[in-house]
Length: 305
View 1: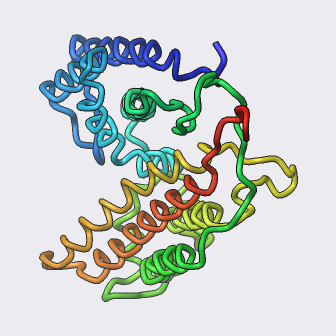
View 2 (view 1 turned 120 degrees about the vertical axis):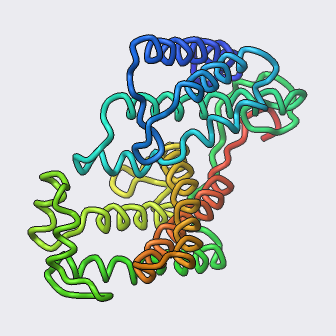
């Protein structure tokens, strides 16, 4: 089974995933296992049953209907992964659920694309005749348009107030009416990793935000399409998958913080700074990913090309 022929076997893989997904949820329900989700809330039994049924519905013609369910179910994935790296994750069950949701969302999107491209090549989307398993022709490495780069640069600037404030607290200074001692007291329950970085003046979440900025820059510059030292093409989905996942979650989370900050009775500036930071990073990732997907879109190497 060659990866190049994935449109021919994607539905079989979806079927395996759907049965396995429903079976795992059934096992958790029968054993009374608590399933954390969405910032460590516990998933109720009815939600587990609904997700299991939605997965089994993917075995029918309802694939386009249930696909958005599992795309939305990936919400919070980047935040959970960052927490896991910092030693503050929700545990193995939460990680398994996230990985299953991410895998399901990817498989269902691919299967939906195949269905919608009937009569055209399911891989490149062009209207050329079969065979549809020819090698790809990849476009040359190019940067994003100047307008796109300006948009993502402005979006990335949203992290500055938030990152500067958190860095001041981490270094022992006072800001926004809060002392460093109070800030460290509120974050005393962090893992050894986060406390160790804070001891040398580095906030772990600020470090994660800088990594997101690096990803945005890679999405919009030529070096993000070709490994600088190896001179080999970067696999297209390598930056796109984390950009889509993180961009979706961060943009929604940031927007919620900005709106919530307008009605909160305390912590107004820090909530707003957080909203600008996360919303800006999310917007930058989504805009960058859209540009990268367009610039790296391959076509099949068929006769006449």
